[in-house]
Image (cartoon, rainbow, N blue to C red):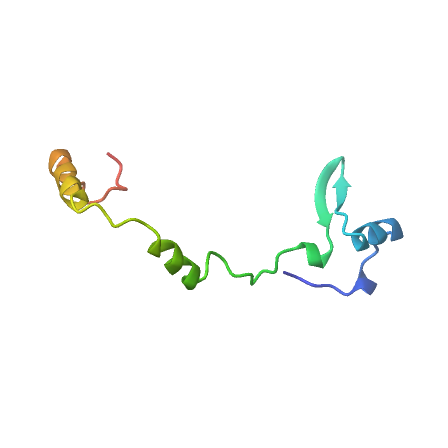
Amino acid sequence: MSSINADEVRIPRLARDAVARHETVVVLNRERPVLALVHPDDVAPATAPRGRAMGALAAALRVLPDPDPAFADDMEEVLRSVGPGPDDPWAPS
């Protein structure tokens, strides 16, 4: 994210007041939106953690049922029935 000093930008008072009220102000150029002004509190921080904490993940995994013991055998049977995969799956065929 980039920052600029407010003295270097001309933003009309109506737009500043709207943003202060947590309203999004859309700036148009030739009737097309080119810029959105938003209050900083309304934007997720760029360093916000993504996903779930490991503790939450471990708790979710603990309540899952045990895996089906025959699942691996079923997958082996699928692989046998399909045959070997290509050496390079991304190469054009």
